[in-house]
Image 1 (tube, rainbow, N blue to C red):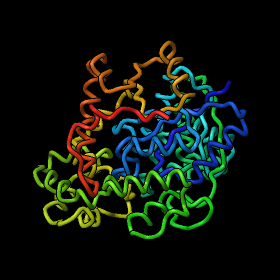
Image 2 (cartoon, helix red, strand yellow):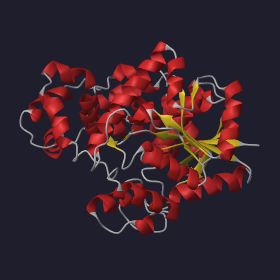
Image 3 (cartoon, helix red, strand yellow):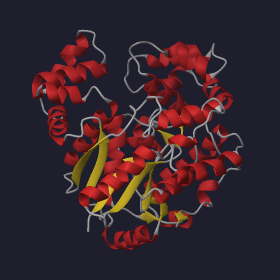
Image 4 (cartoon, one colour):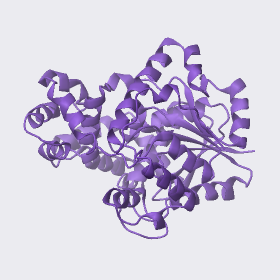
Length: 397
């Protein structure tokens, strides 16, 4: 029996995700189990997830996943390379995953594999430096080097967001020397950041409509709509940076210029712009507008802002996650958990009390995650009391 891993945000779970899980079973067999590694409270674009991790885990389970594991914040709110490394490491550490599926614009594994091999080659770095010295952005220089070294098809892969992420998944599988087999699937429907309608509208379109108070139920499966209705009614959604904007600015206004430096991952002096911007901005929107230049994608700026607010330092993601935390499972998923008890390379957390059995590194991360979740609730319409991570059990269907 195949066990297929998927790395996702499900922010929210939409019809494209539903199609992907069905397509996995069409290709690998109807009895294929699906293990999802899902982002926790914060997501790759540098924002709080639309609704809480357990609600989104339930969406995934009702949409066809069998087991949902958490990708902790140091890896979930990170660039593609780090996001992929954390997710792939967890799938490999489960000891039960045989395949890994991912959606991409090309749907063709060959050029993605060529691009991944090129990025890990010894000559890539020298080519990248040459193009950067000519004034190219990092993304354009990266694509130009791969195109020159591995061919136009491989270079063209890096022009689309999901292809980029797919390449990073392949690099992580190679680095881990994992026996997990990749499965490239075409991404259905609207582009990653598109707000366009259609049968496979993007998560971005659903979020935009929900945040704007517009009709959104036609963009998601009925099971997702029912869960979102419950979360909206309870004031647990929609979460946004705007709602916690004053808390963010309160933290950032206490920081010195040197305090911002560790969060400037590129070492390009961006922290100077953040420090200056915080002295003038009255909202997070004004701050982001102040620091924005053509050189920096907005997602990178939001991540730096969020990391500074959370106190999430780059060193905290240098390794890979030290535990497998269960957010939800159905009966099939619980059978996988019993297998993982014997085969997993990391401790498996099925309830908060299990934290006491962890080593120091893992306990420290869980405590940090608990604090970040408390801050996440400040981004919700009705903030919750602190301490939810120590009382919230996994969703079991």
